[in-house]
Image 1 (tube, rainbow, N blue to C red):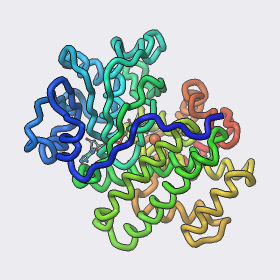
Image 2: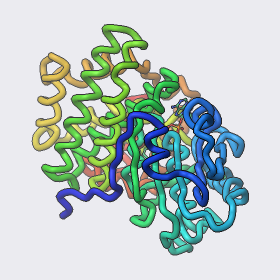
Image 3: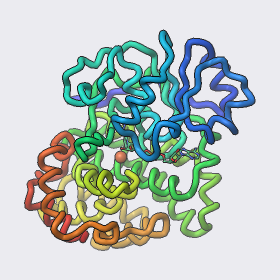
Image 4: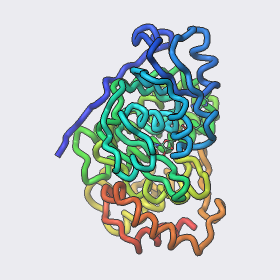
Length: 370
Ligand SMILES: NC(=O)c1ccc[n+]([C@@H]2O[C@H](COP(=O)([O-])OP(=O)(O)OC[C@H]3O[C@@H](n4cnc5c(N)ncnc54)[C@H](O)[C@@H]3O)[C@@H](O)[C@H]2O)c1
Ligand SMILES: [Fe+2]
């Protein structure tokens, strides 16, 4: 088993100017970002690279159609892809570092060999996905009405770059959804049967940093997050390292139907599943890593171990109020369809669950969250 694998070289800079100067960003580079990230952070630096604004190609999380449209506009002969954005931009950019990524559906169907071709530099501007240190890209496949992830080692970034300054414009709602995503990465990876003592160092440290941060925001209000952005960026990165090999599990698997059919942001759809899945695990197995996890959480939350998921939800609700599935417009009749789709399409994730998750368990969790 793999005890720890660290693929990209991790850099951190105080400012975008330092980043541009040290990594010599310029001619021959393509930067994929958003205009509202580029304007305040890079415009004055007068970069000589090609800049592509992702939002001109479609709104929301990545899709095969969005990727095809960007692909058509990429210049010929570029050497490096520099992705500066949230998980959406990082995941999109990963496929453009491959020798061939078109048609995108063929890449997702395994019909194209994912050969690495360009240097890839990944710079997150949210504090969630950890995509800068994983080999995963998750796209909505529009014609198939589903979200699918691919994971190829050739899609690891060569460099992952942390610049806290980039998060200063992050709206509270995106801060909330992305940091809850990071928390779920940390918890799911710690409980994964494929984790190790070393990966868990990253999981548990990420959990602590995120929950201690949430307590301060609960006490000081939303603006209380501003001085904590460096902690949250680091925690999201550690959580990314933590799940890079051990994987995410049932929470992520079960969030996909809600995310793709009801356009719920990734972190929010995870939160909708999170405690439901934990309570399901606890029904079948209360010893092993989940006992360590519960004691760890109880210590941070200052509560009794038996109340840990109630107390955790109370704290998380101050950051992002949890909604029942029917509040998103899900109908009761859809729950079996959701469960069947998870069993059919999300084995990549389900296999890392703390206990084996079958159709009946998945359906029971959906019903408990309805
Ligand atoms: N590859 C992986 O390992 C992995 C892991 C988890 C999630 N994901 C994927 O990542 C995506 C979600 O990414 P996300 O949570 O980072 O959100 P996101 O990239 O979808 O961004 C959400 C919104 O915030 C805006 N935004 C981002 N940074 C900003 C900033 N600094 N200032 C102002 N606005 C900013 C974006 O433009 C967008 O409108 C999903 O598609 C999910 O499936 C990938
Ligand atoms: Fe995630």
